[in-house]
Image (tube, rainbow, N blue to C red; front, side, top):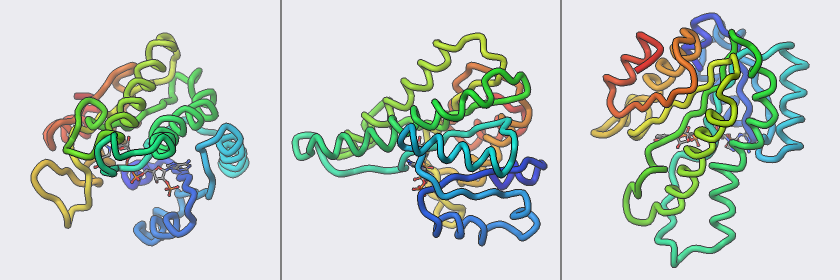
Length: 222
Ligand SMILES: NC(=O)c1ccc[n+]([C@@H]2O[C@H](COP(=O)([O-])OP(=O)(O)OC[C@H]3O[C@@H](n4cnc5c(N)ncnc54)[C@H](OP(=O)(O)O)[C@@H]3O)[C@@H](O)[C@H]2O)c1
């Protein structure tokens, strides 16, 4: 997001939590904040997503690019026999169903624009159990992977750039980096470059190493 702002984009961020939006504004310089629009909203229902879209369009007029990075980064509640159906609903709501409701509201804004894009951010947790007790994370993340695949195949001819960035590593802040992790700033730079360069469409850009992210950042593809 920071990188998109630095490239000259006006960027809008929607969150359910005003304090997180305030934290984001504190993180950015005052000049960057001039190009940031923040909205408190819940895109996890069709009605909520429509309300958020209305507020966004009223404030900025037009949307060219959407990055969908919904959900939560981690869930480790334990093995499935110890879980409830209610918890599975919660996980699927967060990782899969909100991805659908947000997409249903925002995809129509960009899909017919050859200069537009829709990008899903997904993770490798959908392909394997990351460690014991993360089973529901695998279910939710797998739903998000399948959703992005379905959209690519259901809409093969849309002129907008429709892509998925699948991050097969942990993402964290630069101070907390360790083996198997990449910085959120590197991920942001790579996604910004994909959006800005518009080099590919209907692709899964799988990033399994910092080198993959560097390639994406410099070429807009891997
Ligand atoms: N973090 C990692 O290590 C990692 C690694 C690989 C892949 N990924 C992938 O990255 C994607 C996002 O994960 P993340 O780590 O960025 O999680 P995150 O830091 O928890 O961010 C998820 C965002 O989704 C928003 N959100 C969720 N439901 C919403 C709703 N109903 N309405 C509005 N906003 C909503 C949250 O906003 P609020 O809660 O503020 O409303 C939050 O800003 C996932 O697909 C994940 O698989 C993450």
